[in-house]
Length: 359
Ligand SMILES: [Zn+2]
Image (cartoon, rainbow, N blue to C red; front, side, top):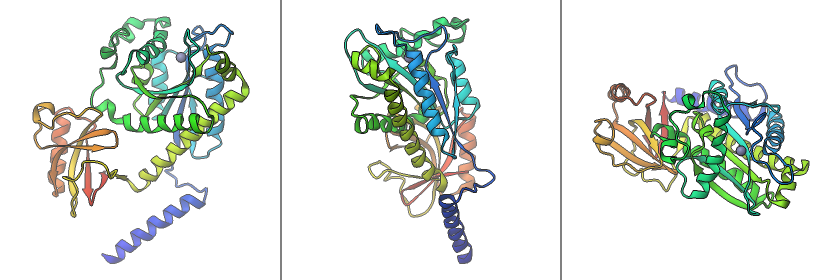
């Protein structure tokens, strides 16, 4: 047994080193796929400004520059929803990302306002907390009216009623903490490296973000209606700087994610309430949902499943079914959770405060 363990350690270390120091990737090496979505295009100009700067042009230039920079990283594959001035339907944008099984979806836009408002803000999908956020999402969502069959395609959305617009289920929030992490890195770069006005990370109901099944953000890179910022956004220096700030944030995010994935471990953040889960021996649970909302761990909230544990991890509450050191027992519980409708449920194990996804 001891030999086996030392072998595993040596093997793991050699993998670590080969990954850091060599370009020979294992045969099953999967590139980190980033889909870059330049907002608007073609018959949809996006927001116009008095100076004639058009959102669709600025968004496309920044998107292509981000892709150019990320494309130089051998571990990243870049895909675009558009590379030219063409109209792309909102649901098609999400479809491109979903089909590619992308790791990230980045949508690039510009803001506009009747005042001289300025600054950059980054959105993740969620319920808006104030009317300004709602107005931004509403303006971006209105492009669906330019599409054929929009009534049919977007029947689930009522653009004037944010609650219906979201219809967020617990499972759809699975990617929220990662989206927020990336959005914060983008805003940090804007503020610290470019000295831009930081309008912070926000939540609102963007249809385009609702279509994707991976961490997704929408960046309002600045106000084309602001005299100075409009000029900056329309200049090649401004576009290069903004693209560089976004690309660096994506690479930093990728670094964080890969480090965790490589070991198959999610380190539980110290501040979390997982004390009930911490154990010297391995404990198995079925993760059935993740949400920013704290829901009582009662069976009536979880389709009749009893034995629900709620634990805070980062900004999300994770909900677990079952609690056992018996592996075949937890496999039975996984089947039970799936039969109740928790189709993407999976087994996790906890040991000494470290959570691990069990395959
Ligand atoms: Zn836009």
